[in-house]
Image (cartoon, rainbow, N blue to C red; front, side, top):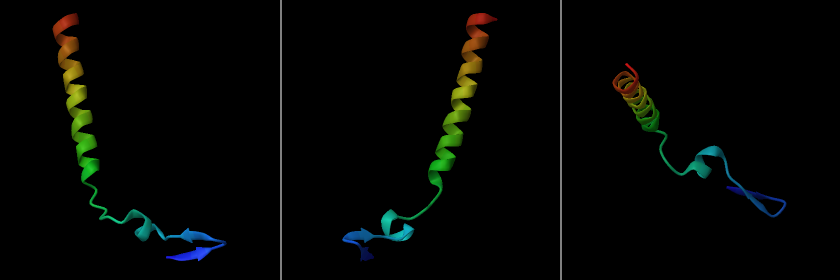
Length: 48
């Protein structure tokens, strides 16, 4: 961390202050797949 022209400048790791696990990527894919399956099931029930 350093200052430039009175502003604090952080690199990416310092600004993030957390671990990059990539778990949310799996949550997004699973929830998207489940919503597509639910849409197909609802379509099949009501319009078939």
